[in-house]
Image 1 (cartoon, rainbow, N blue to C red):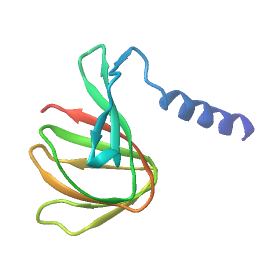
Image 2 (tube, rainbow, N blue to C red):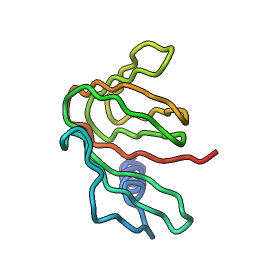
Image 3 (cartoon, helix red, strand yellow):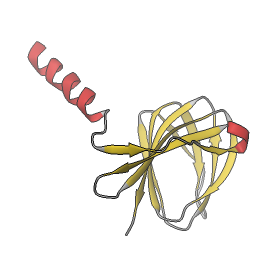
Image 4 (cartoon, helix red, strand yellow):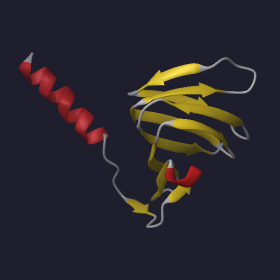
Length: 118
């Protein structure tokens, strides 16, 4: 049992790091700094952003499909023609391409956004 728990913790530690990436020096800054992120590009050309969101309400839009992984924090999501959905980290949700959506951030959110080209 002890070895099993160590293996799980080791796997989680490995999965929380990215290898072979380029990181943008300049931050993406939205809503007067309430949402910030840094773009990372992988060797295969795929892209993600790593960032934080401070408490507040925001409207954003997508170009590509996005998968947002919340490491910690609490957020409500409103997609078109849908009801508000609540997520508390660790959690994940997908935003379709070319979609305008709303967020209510309740507490500091640490997130990773993956851009998926279909």
